Figure 1 (spheres, rainbow, N blue to C red):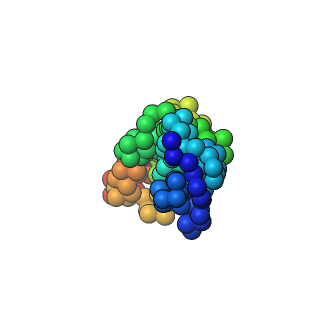
Figure 2 (cartoon, helix red, strand yellow; figure 1 turned 30 degrees about the horizontal axis):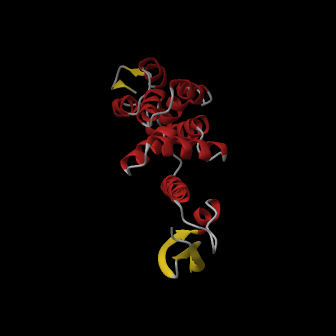
Figure 3 (cartoon, one colour; figure 1 turned 45 degrees about the horizontal axis):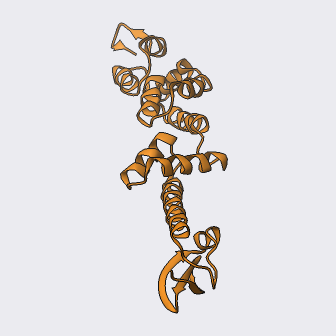
Length: 196
């Protein structure tokens, strides 16, 4: 059985592990510490397995955090990303649980933030609901997010005032997911042009 003879700093949070005086691997410091690697410690089967689990955990966590650096994501989006990277289901679950405890993954917060952003860009409830469904947000969180928004009729009226009361505005509102009755209320009928 091989023994750890030294741990040397390897930069950026890594160490080089030597077994029986021969360089073996570069490992994250956190993994080495968590499994108890230190000079004189034997790298037995149990410790090697624990190291493998720890490395998989750190790889999964690193992948998820890297995805969150770009933008907020729903739990389902992160699960899909981890699955695509070959992360085992148990490791995915642990990663999501860790991130949720840290407050980095919260579907309700994600849904509310995303819904506000889409509403501010002139979108209706149907488009917002569809976007959140595509991102795997649970239905309860979607409804909570939509209920927290300014009423759809007020958003549609603001779009109509900005764009003018025309057939073109009606098409815009339809394309951006506003409800039919909301559109009718926002764009009044005018005999001269049809709509407007």
